[in-house]
Structures are given as C-alpha cells and as structure tokens.
Length: 185
Image (tube, rainbow, N blue to C red; front, top):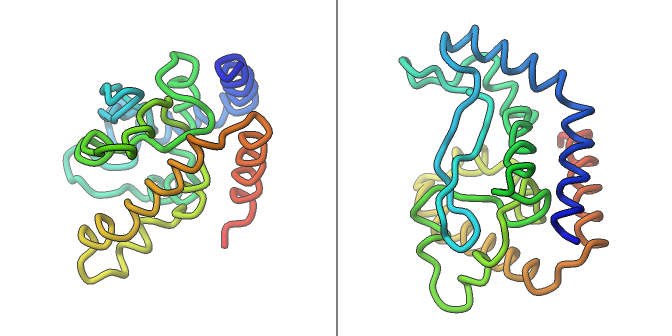
C-alpha cells in the first residue's frame, strides 16, 4: 500500500511540477556551467547508500552557493527531483529524511529502526527543522549543536514516525508540508 501511495503522489507531483524542475535545471546548468542536477550519496533503507537527486546550487569550481541556488534552497526547489528517487524506489514521499554518511548509518540499538523504512522527501522532523541551516549558522559550534541537539531530536521524532505511521498520518504530513511551503515564516 505504501509503495502505491508513493508512486501515486510522485507521479502527480512530477506531472504538476515537471515544468518547474526543467526551468530550475536549465538555470542551474547555466549558472554553474555544469550539469544542473547534483547527485549525492545518502544513507537509505537498511543503511544502504543511494544517490539522491537534487538541483545543483553550488558552483563546482568556486564551491559557493549560486545566486539562484540560494533561492532554490530557500524555497526547497532543489529538492523537487527527489520525486524521481521515489519512482526509482530509493525513497518514499513521507519518511525520515536521508542523511549523509556518518549519522543514520552509525545509529545503535533501537534507534536503527529508522533504517527499516525508505527515507522520505518530507517528515515531521524535516518540517520542524526546515530552517536548519539558519539555526546552525547562529550557533557558536554548529557541528556540536547539530550532533548534540538537532540530530538526537530528529532521531526521536523519526522513531515516533516509524512506530506510529499510517496512511492518514502520511497525508497529514503531506498537507503540513504543502502549507509550510506557502507559509514561509
């Protein structure tokens, strides 16, 4: 049922948003003078690595965020190609956000239950920390703050999702995500 749900929502999203993905891709390609898509290794279901697809927002030579890249990140437009990851079966619409190696793959004990699910495009934890970059920029020791405050909170929230997930719950998270996009506070 979850796979059908994911395929249905990914197809609808791609039908409605493919024009926007193409425009972002073209702008990113021109601005970065490279492929407008960016692939990055992330931790997936059962701790297996997969390549997440995003719109490129960092210039490959200067390693700085591009002017449109800032806008794409702020509006989360760089995340739209992840609907292709859902179609491919690497991701789900709702589930714990995939992280770079060094976090979820190092979980111990019952916390590893998070890895039983496919990572998602959205979750309650990603909504709570939608301004994570801004939060970390305000910290004196951002890596320590992430490791000691944000990441443990995400683990707690994602475990709650793993243990209590339902289709209605997923629909609720999708609706909160859509409202969050339009309410940029």
